[in-house]
Amino acid sequence: MLFKRKLLIPFCLLLSSCGSVSKNPPKYIEDENIFSQYLTRQFNIPLAKDSTNYIIVSESSCSGCTENSLKSLRSLQKTKKSKIILNQVSYYKLKNGNDFQVDEDYIIDSNNEINHLKYGTNNICVIQAFNSKIYNVVCNITSSNEVALLK
Image (cartoon, rainbow, N blue to C red; front, side):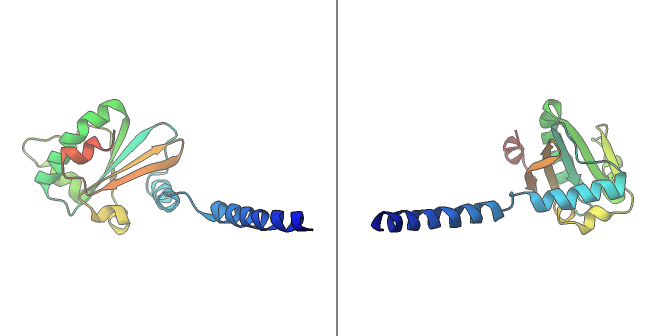
């Protein structure tokens, strides 16, 4: 009888801890849902299966900050597939800039829906995905130090 009591308490603790772990969602599950629905709705493309950086440029970012951030991100773009998401305002800001050309793989959000998502309120936001899962989201990138954290 004493033996059963000694086993009952650890067994109950084990069961309760297992249940709480399984209910804990992955860190970026909300981002996966929001961003994959956005990609499908706006561009009819799924979240990438291969390693991809989605670089989101906000319309509220200043041209100089955007140009500097994108220049810093070029080294990252050489090592991984990258897709730049611009809305019409941010595209024209960059296109009309004197010393920067948008020549990478980019898509334009003509409905400006990205501005209504949480990623569109930042200067530059990078969403890193692999195997149709988001594993990192870094927003408000303004310096090469922040870019170094993405590698």
